Image 1 (cartoon, rainbow, N blue to C red):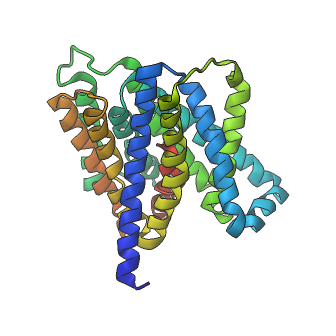
Image 2: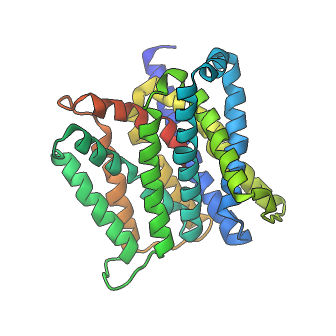
Length: 319
């Protein structure tokens, strides 16, 4: 396969992965709207099933790493922190944000993790944001304001729960992007994400006693659950990782804007979610930050490039 074919494959894989994440979020919205299921239950199912599947998928090529990590207690502790404080928190916050608002709003608010990461990097390197970073910050604040108020400061258009959990999703993505870069890269994305999801799923299930949550779904409901777990994680994750391998994290970051776009279109066309003009302008402001922050700058220090390399790898599975 030549260079051009690799690039084409990378673009297609990244774009399809983003669309599948958007579709997954919309399926979650469908489940909350139609059957009022618990976001806690859905998160546990997604983490446990997807974590098991990704771990099994890693066996053919990563069996040595799957076994080797158990010889390093410090890395196991880091993995547990990553799975519980990172992946689990993000997955739960994202699904809960959808249950309080809609898939499009939750997915767009999740994109604010890029801005949060940029601010953390600026603090870490003790520097002020450069021009395009400052513009991204202004766009992020303006977009969030428009989504929350519709442009009227005296009226909260987005529910408090939707706004709070959406921002929590963005913050938790930032946390586990940083955790993933904290001593875990040598074990590989599939190993870390598979084990991390299992750790988070087991911890959340035990803490919440998820088996006590009543769930009664018709076939259409179970199909939506399968879409969230299978298409939104087990299929989308390897696709996106292939895209990162083919075209790199920078281009992949920008092409993955198909996620909030697909979530918005599917919510509107399938679930008849209505968006105001202020909502759409707010969406556009926040999505624009992807293109402003994804491209690396030569004058940035090492911590920034490291963040960019991990930013759209395991973190993309948040949605």
